[in-house]
Image (cartoon, rainbow, N blue to C red):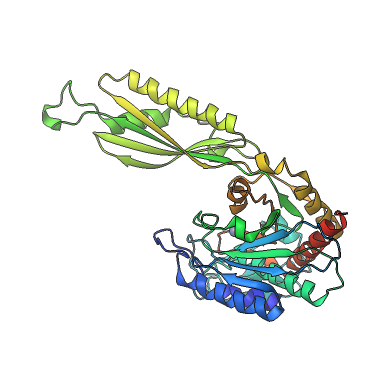
Length: 409
Ligand SMILES: [Zn+2]
């Protein structure tokens, strides 16, 4: 599995938000085509790639039971556009002894067990890093390699009873498009698991609910030399509005756990019109609405204090907490807990302060929690993964297929 992973890492699959094609970059197709060949070589059936690059395949059922639900495993092939994706040189630090790991291409890139509790907990493991200039791409090539390795293992051990298992590899997760063209009907599973999480044992089935808000302040522009008593500067209205947002709460920099936030992140400013784009995050729809009301009331208050000013507010849905769906399918999460325990790990369940493809897929009719893939330091050149944790993820996939079979009469 480690060899597969290292090969996948060396293919540049960085996604590109500016591209309108799907996949957004040709390197993703290179890896997706390679995966088609590898799945066929391993013996999977129904191996297909659709017009948008989505690869799907089946591990045929080995059980005599007729009603074992079809389950699926999904990983994304693209890497974050935030970091360079070409010339990735993965390094395996065998039997890690706790020393500082200086990445050779940039000696300022150093992994220190003293500053990274997760790394300190992995002494004795084989740690894989990049070489200093690039991402490693364990997010999510670790998940890709784990799914292929688990498929290979199951194909070689037909004595292990399980129902039909579907696998899928998808493009463009990192630019939020991974679920867009996912054909849930064609996938044909009762539920799925994305293999795209962090430390061994993690199981995520709760994500943010997210909306995007645009608050547009409208002023009045005229020649500044003759503007007395007439000009209304929309930039100043927006500045006033932003300065009145709470400083000690409700922001990304002051919240964690189950707290949501209001996050102004882009401003398009002119005297006549200034639009402030704001991300709204919470774990419940009611919490989102509360925050949106707060923002709207604050904007209207600012405008009311400035004669001649106006404001326009737009809200659009981004995604919703997958928990709303997964609560209706408790067995999906329960089977995952059991599979993790059988791998000798303790399930660690924490809310995701973000969204996954699974958040969208869950609302598209495919309940999809997220399982650990062993990834650490996502989207950073200090990204690392432990080969032993990746083996645990493979074991967990195999266990999960068996748990679903055992629980079916
Ligand atoms: Zn990912």
